[in-house]
Image 1: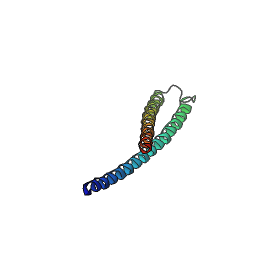
Image 2 (image 1 turned 45 degrees about the vertical axis):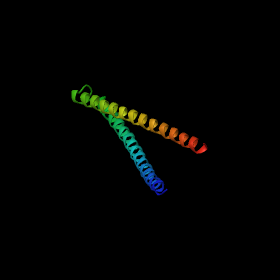
Image 3 (image 1 turned 180 degrees about the vertical axis):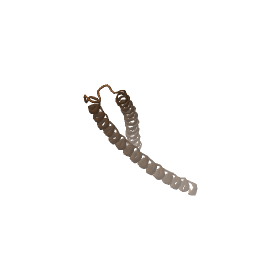
Image 4 (image 1 turned 90 degrees about the horizontal axis):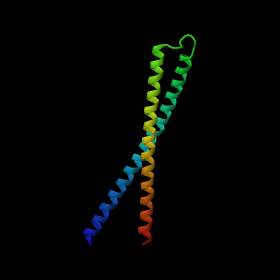
Length: 110
């Protein structure tokens, strides 16, 4: 009976550590998502400002500004792709947590 108690305590400790790790991981992912959203908004503001300058009569058609505007649009597109990937991972993770919760409820009900 003592070995069963020992493995029960080890299991409880491991489950607690795993739960703590998952919570910390989710916090980091959400923090990253929030930072990425803020960064993308700043890039969009920058692109808008650059577009305004590009369309001024004095600078219209400037090759350097054209390349800078194209480059900023490419960076924004890459950041938006990261947002899409991050949202997909987050949704997938939430679905798995829901399934895990349903599985635990089923096991408790049995």
